[in-house]
Image (tube, rainbow, N blue to C red):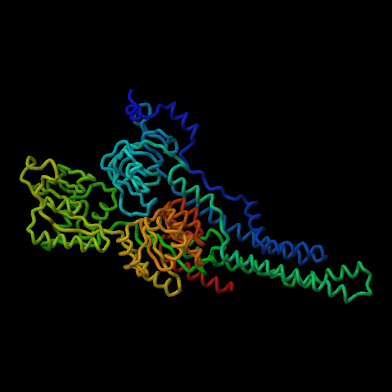
Length: 631
């Protein structure tokens, strides 16, 4: 048996068991949670609470058990509020936890079999098809018109057409086209993947591990209370020494022991007056009430200190796909050369898959339905032939028998469709101009064409042999949410700069930014430009640039870091795995509760349960009110 045949026959059951013993389960190691004792210890170690505990001990030593007990009751109450808030958050996160594909088809012992995705091991041959969420990383060994939605990792809304390339190293791209990644979704075609990474070794898993192991930085509030505590302690120490010394000098007639006790008591009494005993309690009550109000507005607070941080942010970094936009492809524009819009929409629908997984196919069918042409009406005829989509041809078609007629419906790349259409030169020039016009708006352009034949014998075997008539063009995009533009205006009026960070291309990003009112939408920095920049150059650039495109997770981290080094208080929003590192590093990370990945929710300080940009704005407003009340 050759090496290639050995690979294509898959692992034996014995080999799979041995590899699972070596590599473990295909699961992400859950982030270690603090137990009750660790949570309490973490709270007590805050400078303000240490000061209260020291004060309570001093009261007991001085024979004031009532005051000491009151202090300890304050500390216990604050700890209880903090622990209960975190427990509620953990409980909700557990309920939100999403599951990956439970089962996957693999080749074991030379035959196809279904196994739990957690039982995958390196060396397995994994069979993927439309609708499958890929559970492990691996190299493609077979590929049939395979398109994968990698937006959860890359932030790019458009699907990636996969192909088998012998030399991965020749590619300059971070995400390779001959490789499939865990956590991504197959939207078209089929493929066979040779698994080489599972669990925490996958790109998805690495991001999760980096987020889980990243240290928690103190919030602005924690820094301020820390400084206040040190200042109070220093003043109390100075007063203790001064008052003690003055008292000792002023009672020379008393015995030495009495002079010492009297001077110490006088010093301690005044020093204790300098300790803001009520401050931690008042602060915690304010933050708890704030967290409660935010919960009523669909915002889940992970840490109480995050409530105050909301009120002091100066820059809001937002991910485009899913946060500013709907994360749902939609037909934005239709154009016909002859004004027959009904024919364009009908032909568009006839050219779609009857069981669509691809976001664009779904958008086209939804567009037909919104114009009164339902799926039932579209697919009521007999589908007698299909021209499958290929990445080389970039077009597809269906042949239908409807009402006694045989109709060819084709759609795809405008360049490819126009090449097989019968068009007068004037109409061709008008069409090409319209294609450029729609493309400049950041829309994805699809051409639609049709033809009729008299009998099945006349159906061409290849779509390129069809002689088509152009029906028109449609423009698709992932449109911005209606609530985003007014929300951004509110942020700008409040002195908060909005920065868009996306894995999508610059033209699309700039178009969306203009539509929602983000300032400086003409200035764009791409991922390649970021790679060439030093940290100092980036710190200068982020002062004026509000759009970053074609970025990867490491770039998002650098952007957030540069903003923070410029003295900004940074909030970062996102929903994908690729957003998690930046969510963790920002002063406050805001994740989406419904569609957000598990990793991004774990990294965030605040979770939006309704995935609504307006909720972010309302949350910031509440944060400002709470911040003003605390001050």
